[in-house]
Amino acid sequence: MVSYDRIVKLSLERGFYFPSSEIYSDSPAGFWEYGPNGNNIKNKFIELWRRELVRRDDMVEIDGSQIMSKNVFIASGHLDNFSDPLILCSKCKSVLRADKFILEKEGINVPERIPINEVDRILNQYNLKCPKCGSSFQKTERFNMMFKVGIGPNNDEAYLRPETCQAIFVDFPRIFKIMRGKLPFPIAQVGKSFRNEIAPRQSLLRLREFYQAEIEIFCNPNQLDAIPKFDEIQDTILTIDDGTIISKVTAKEALNRKIIPNKLIAYYLSILYEFYEKTGIDMNQTRFRKLSEQEKAFYATIAFDFELKTSVGWLELVACNYRSNYDLSQHSKISKEKMEIMDPVTNEKVLPHVFELSLGIDRSIYSILEHCFAEDHENNRVVLKLKPYLAPLLAAILPLVKKPELEEIAKNIYYDLKKDFDMYYDGSGSIGRRYRRLEEIGVPFAITVDHDTVKDSTVTIRYRDTMEQKRIQIKELKSFFEKTLKP
Ligand code: GLY
Image (cartoon, rainbow, N blue to C red):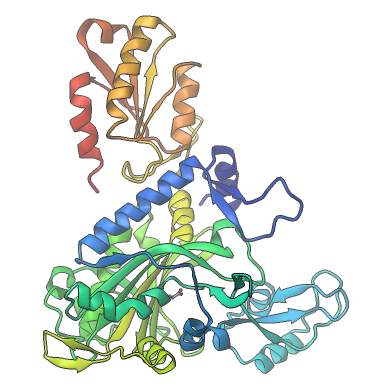
């Protein structure tokens, strides 16, 4: 398996992502930027998510504000509960996140919501000291991860959202009404969220500013098994770790054996799984892990994490939480607005429950890079085997040599195709070196214009993964590319 460091090296060298404000000494940790190649992959990943989840399931998508009022987060519970256990060295004042520190030192998985006296007990039991100066820690505290902002000249208190979905909850009655919704009613949103992590690290894996793609499925709690589209996915095979045993079962079996509690959850876990199958990650290295009481977020009653095995261990890519009516009833209580709706399917007045698929985009991008990275020792090359529809560029047009008659044809092909596809023109340097650069950033095809092109209007298509080359008529390129872009 390729190492985490190797992926970061590739990302820095090839502009997938790099640290923010990096020319300044006061650049804060936990902020990274996507360069041109990474940004293209991110956008294509989001487009695949839209295709395989939003459009597949007739969801609606919104784009809410990143800054929201204090009351939103009083209602959501984030101002009281959204915190991590923090330890402070009594001498050098180094600050650490207790659960991560204990995991690193002792391999013990400490749940996020562990009582702080329990953290102190573990620190004592294993005689854990400050890694910098060896002194003992002060008593564990809880650190709230919300970013406070001041609005306008009076600096009115507001907050950057720690999850995109609060706008979905606040807006739900309006959206349900204008879209003439019926339950289950999924609302999706892509955007940035912000968490003041105690110890951000590992580039895209723990950021303070990060992208989420969230789907909140509003449902009638009495109708969780009335999901006709369940039949579409009943044979999808999922790996589920329920805390005691790991089962590789169809969605139908998982339901019969009560590993998954209802058809609604089984359906959405399955379409999520089918979406990730198309991303190029190794699905044999994935699992849905049911979280224990102590591991669940404060708003969740049932929670499965969709996890992937990577070089840094199991990584949570999607939090799948059954949030009951927690959010809608809290917003109704604090705002005094009614959040119930009439469900036209059952003719009942209901305060819907919510099941969510909260997907971390940045972690998913890292995972795709890692799982698609291949070293071809025989040919002394690095190949990023990205799916064509996730590659930063679909193809490059390369005149074989620097001759005006080849360059003119190559440029015409480039100008024609770049209207429809992400193309690149590279007219100089040795052809071998040009291929290597493209392979490293995952460009699936290279189109070479050579002397035969002048005679018969054909070019060669070179396949990134096999290095195979085929001749094709220039006029057939467009339909060739269209076919390769179908997931
Ligand atoms: N909305 C759930 C989360 O951000 O984890």
